[in-house]
Amino acid sequence: NMTKTHLRPIVAAVVAVLAGSVAAACSQQSSSPRTSDAPADPVTLSLATSLQNAQGTWAVVPMGHLDQTLNTFWQLFFEPPGGTTWSNEVDATAVATNGGLTLASGSDGSVIVGIRPSNLLRYSPLIATTDAGGTWANGVLPYGLSAYPDSLAASSEQQAAALVEAPRGDQVLESLGTLGSWNPLVDERALAATPAGSVCGLRAITAIAYLAGTPFIGGSCDRPGEVGILARRSGSWQLTTPFLNTKGSGLGGDEFEVLALRPTGDGLSALFAGYGGGSDGKSDKGVILLGAWTSDGHKWTTSPPLQLLPQERLASFGPANGSNVFVLTSAGSSEGTGSGSVPAPERLEVLAPGENWVQLTTPPAGTATVAFSSDSKVDALAVDQSILSVWSLTPDSHDWTRAQVIRVPIQYGSSS
Image (tube, rainbow, N blue to C red; front, top):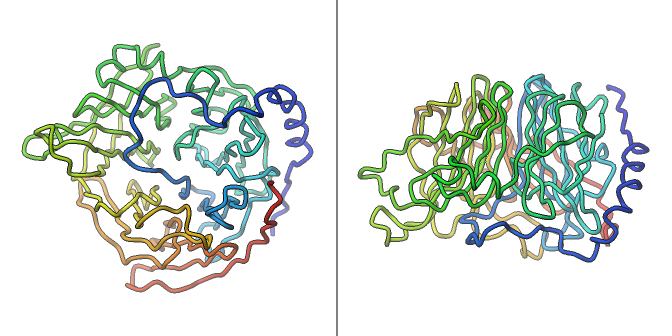
């Protein structure tokens, strides 16, 4: 077993230094005011997700009493390459995780974990590892991470970006040295006012990523048929939009929101949702999901749409093997269940570039997210309050098999 260095004293010192600067804001709401009168999001996003790199597979899931914010504790799980056993690495965060965790993987194999604000915390501590959790470095954001799953991005351990809820609206910060030093890259208002932002009618920043060191930003747009993905090139923001064949597809009247921007082995993947009217601008066909891929940041390959049923919500999404992406849907909301469990999943769909959506065997009840390993094994991480059950699906099997049970010692009431 590798020796782990959890740098609690450093995190505690950072917390103590910053606590005084945020004390005056303790009575305010945790979320910053929006910069526009944007309508409600078409889908409610969960932070439950997973990622893979050369160091192994990481996943974040909520556990505890999920109908009680102060008794929901997000956990950080890890499985080494070729392994069959998950371990819980959440102690490395050293602070309460009620607000959620956000993951980002760098091109050098590093992993950065951001802790969203909760209770009186109004900023986000960060931890990073380059050796699969053997040792952890610490950092801190001056403001709290946004509640979007892709609000944290990394090109390497030395280059990272974060979407934060700043006092005057959402802002993207960038670090080019250490995770303790951040500089403004762009804010929501300024980006919306650029020629590129005006083309799509940008109303919110929803995702960030890097491609070959170039920052990319995804957003929601109020101009029908426009997908808001912007890249910073030669000192200005330029719109790089996946082509949508709206003829006969019914997509012409949709408004789109970028849900995810993720680096792949040879480029960048995107997941976005379309909602609103059909091509006639009047009919309401519900929410559809599409994937897109690029190797150079200019030309995109776009997938066929996946239609969500009226009772479905987007429970989780993330990378699958290679450049593939997965989408997990469930019925109803993950909150207010009363039992602290995750609703039963509806569908697990996988999408490869240039292919159609493929539905896998429905995961077991309580699945919060799934994780794909390099050997094509799929693990479903199912939550029942403080018990995590790991179910595996292998290429030669059509049924899920329970592979591991982890009992997480949760101290209910410790965050109140």
